[in-house]
Length: 346
Image 1 (cartoon, rainbow, N blue to C red):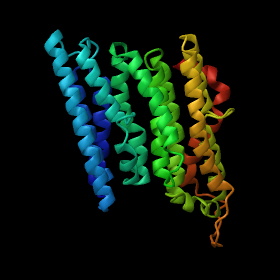
Image 2 (cartoon, helix red, strand yellow):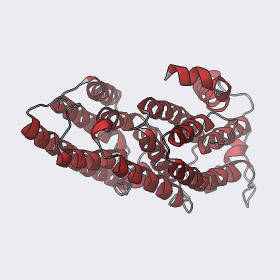
Image 3 (cartoon, helix red, strand yellow):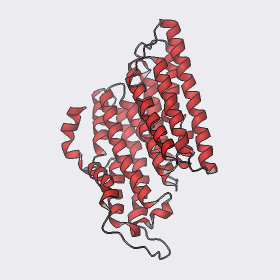
Image 4 (tube, one colour):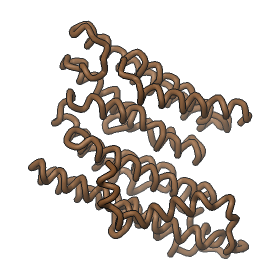
């Protein structure tokens, strides 16, 4: 990708995200979302491969429909209340349309079908952006308007997303699709608690971004896009592969790793809200995610390839290239002991 085009796309992405986070007017929010959409499309289609072009078209169509639905929802609400303020969402039809649009932008079930296909057609770096930074603006809108939305509808969407995210990731062989269904499942956890404790949703999103960034950067370093290529990745870089195992187990939510913290706090908060059955169902559904994370771990660290492959092992890593991965991996595994401090911050 041309450096100037990359600079423009990155700047536009940062600008669009900032506009959505800081604005309280529906028109400005819609404009920020459109800037984000137009900024990420060149990054998706930069390889000029037919699958990348298909992914960019799918992404554009879905995001355009979602943005139009948000505009329709805000117009109906302004027509009935006379205000364009995001916090003044009182019309029932507007709330329903907004929930649909945000679910479409986030990739929540039943509007999730575009997300795995778009991630599969993108590079690993672009897939990282689509899984983390691009989710922040719609999640912010959901956070601001959560008091006006239907709790039963959001809880239903969250539980179905957690279930299907784990269930559909079981038989995948492409690492990007596995991470896409992982994202859908984690977004279900975030949506589940957003009405009762919005700050906990932001904590979960921050930790999810940390863990996912570590995994995507590791996969990008070893060029592991399929489970079959993960079988030989340990030969290229044994230390990096060992840390990938810890990060995957952390993303699965196993104690005493960092990923256990948000699930623990969410289940605790749901129990306080007398939603014990919902917490139990969410905890049981997380076992589906645990299965395919263990599958990834098994392929990357235990399974040997059927044929002998000669690689030079890089035991001494380049400090400039791997310093960020080392930092992210350390944080992905070691933050649970300071969980009281993290909880106090949020």
